[in-house]
Image 1 (cartoon, rainbow, N blue to C red):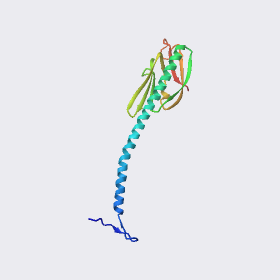
Image 2: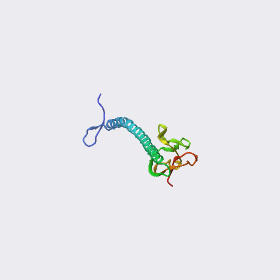
Image 3: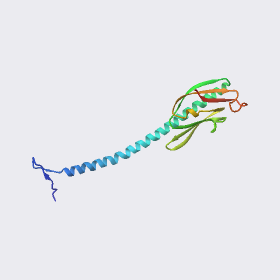
Image 4: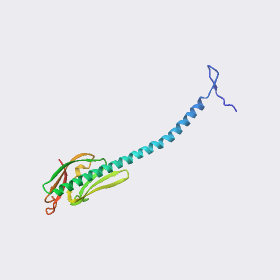
Length: 166
């Protein structure tokens, strides 16, 4: 059965405008059905990469604080060092010493990502304490790491005190 189309006024040829528009629509739908999953997959991978970069940045910052505390603590009081630390996006809180900022041996970065909450830690053999509450937003900060003959909260214990430079 032949396909009927309109005759063109100029040259008398039949036109199949409806059929070509429908074919174009099918090709466009096929192209989008391939392209949309690729775009979604790319956005998921970018999100995972950003989470990984935040965790790596937090690990580097925690390690830098812990190694500086070890160095300053081994020198003893009144040794002091000011360091520059980059805090990546996603860091919600930084604990020094223990999870309640008491005297301890760890620096802990609490990092929130799409996967949830992570705790990035670095260990130091020195007794450390401090307060880095004002450092929890993303950016570069100057941090004072100083050896104390007596901790601010426990006068009998020598420690390394870590605080932001104000």
